[in-house]
Length: 173
Image 1 (cartoon, rainbow, N blue to C red):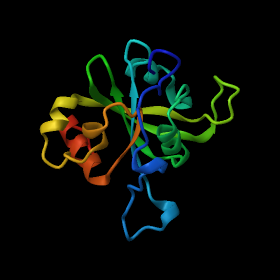
Image 2: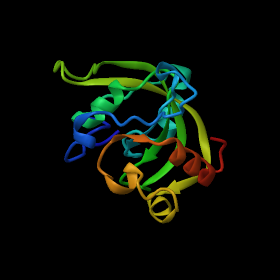
Image 3: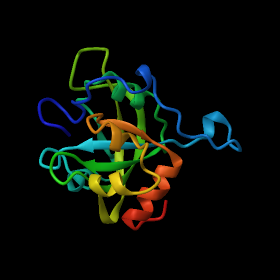
Image 4: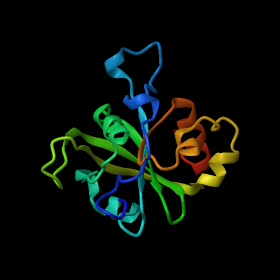
């Protein structure tokens, strides 16, 4: 969660001209069966990993996103998609894995119909946090959105990036 109205404030412009980035490109899978991977940013003093864990299997609405690209990314998510939980501002590190448990629906914190959000639940913590600085110097992550657009609050993660960051965090991809 980000201060100033929700978890998703931030981002100064669209990534890839406003559409979600396709990241599940396994040719052996049907388009509807692909699992995509994401990264959710939150300020830990507002909504941290411990808060997310405390919500249990029900999860929590990822409300407050007021950036069109981040919203479009959430609209592209499917139940079962996995994401990294990233502490922004304080720590600047990936600390765990979350799962989308409800697809995009109207954000309950606003009457403005433009804003949607998904629900996510905590899956497992990282053995060791993976910092933004670690990602910036890790071979294979040069094109990662986190490294190149640090303000986008909900972002895609490629399958290769997912594997690398999971290994860095000491968890199985």
